[in-house]
Amino acid sequence: MDENKAKKLMEQDIKISKAMNKIKHKIAIMSGKGGVGKSTVAVNIAEGLSKDFKVGLLDADIHGPNVPRILGLDGNLMVDKEGIIPLKRNNLKVVSMQYLLPSHDLPVIWRGPKKTGAIRQLLSDVKWGNLDVLVVDNPPGTGDEPLTVLQSISNLDGVIIVTTPQSVAIDDVKKCINMVKELNMEVIGIVENMCSFVCPKCGEETRIFGKGNGKELAKEYSIPYLGSIPLDIKNIEALNDGAPVIEKYPDSKISKKFFEIIEKIKNKLDLS
Image (cartoon, rainbow, N blue to C red; front, side):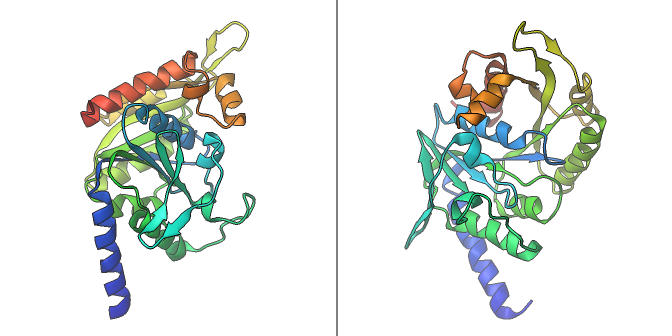
């Protein structure tokens, strides 16, 4: 690495540190693979926390930024001399790569260094201000992008890992857990998504992907089990309407599960 590049990286590290020092708690939402509902979990956790606290939500998934869709929040990020200004939805500040693209359908065809550079720029240049919690929706897997997030954020409180009950998902999550442990970071807990299907007519729950795999995984690794989230048509309806399910259907089964998980996170972070 040449001297100028090393100097720029060091300066960026300082900027990231200064930005993160204004935030009391930082948590990353991770998954071993895509398609397990990680962004849905991240959005509803952030939305729930924002009812009582100052919260930011960073969508760090460069290739599949789903946060804007789930929130129903469109717009473009503005930049002033001090940095990038997050968009706001009620009491929640939001930043996503999607807001920097000219089109929702435009793919990001970048190699690793450019992607990690973009993530570091978001971490260093966004004007979050003073926050109680920053929730980072991490890219799936254990590659460059999630590693960049974990290594760049100083004093990260820990990681929440999202899985589904299938054995193929559990296998990938084990790698994710071991990655976090290798980095000497804490796993705050496991959220098991799509644990059952809630019949929209009778309300009966059916374990279509198996039963208890998430709990067994938590027990195997001595990690807290934060809770299970069912497959519920209410969540799809909320997503299609551009709203977190806990906001649109606060009394639904799925929302009650989310609220239970959010309370556990509050207790873990000692938020009051």
